[in-house]
Structure formats: structure tokens, C-alpha cells
Image (cartoon, rainbow, N blue to C red; front, side, top):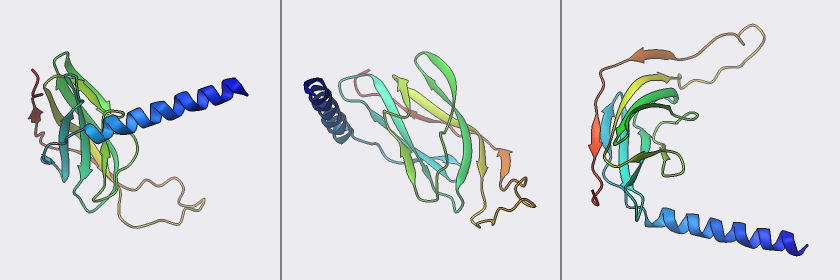
Length: 146
């Protein structure tokens, strides 16, 4: 019982610390990446680590997106986890991080339609959405401490 209470206090302290760190993050302005997607950057306080957040500026849900990000260690490819509804944003240091100056360009994106489907055995194999590559736009952010 005593061990369980100690673990709960440690976890509570970690959650409070995480919440405080998130509150200290100062975000830059939204910048367009093209194809109705915007990004904004923030420097994790006390580090050279950069984080970013994506926003869906389009009228349909993003169902898949992969992108390049380049930081001081080179170019990397990452995949956006899940879907992003129109007008919603997702990101932050728990989701995306880069080391130092970071640039981002979208590689591919897939959007779903804004209609809902009644899935039955006759339609369960259908896929809604389209995949397309588009001209890449890069956005750069340089940490203040570099």
C-alpha cells in the first residue's frame, strides 16, 4: 500500500512538471506549408530542442501525412500520427522534436471526404480519399539560443 501511494505521488509530480513545461512553451506564428496545412514552432525551454505543431486549414480531414524535417543532425522522414480534422491542430514536444534549426516540408498527404459512410459488407473494401504529391514548401525556424 505504501509503495502504491509513493508511485502515485511520483506520477502526480511528473504530470504537474509536464503541465508546467507545456505552459512555458512560447509558440511562433502559423506559417503555411501549402495544401492547406500550417505549422508553427517553439523552442523547448532551456534547450536547443525544437518542437512543432501542425494545423489543418483545409475543409476535409487529413487522414495521412508524411513529411521531411531537417535539423542539425540531417534530414528525416516522419509520419503524422492519426487524423487531423479541419481547423484542428496537433503537436508539441511530446509528439515532434528536432535538434536546433529545423525546417519542414510535406512529402505526401491524403485527405478524406467530409461525408460519412454507412459501412456494410458491400462497401467495407472501399477507400475514401485521395493521395497526391505536391510542390513542397519549406519553413525554417532558428532557436534563439543558437
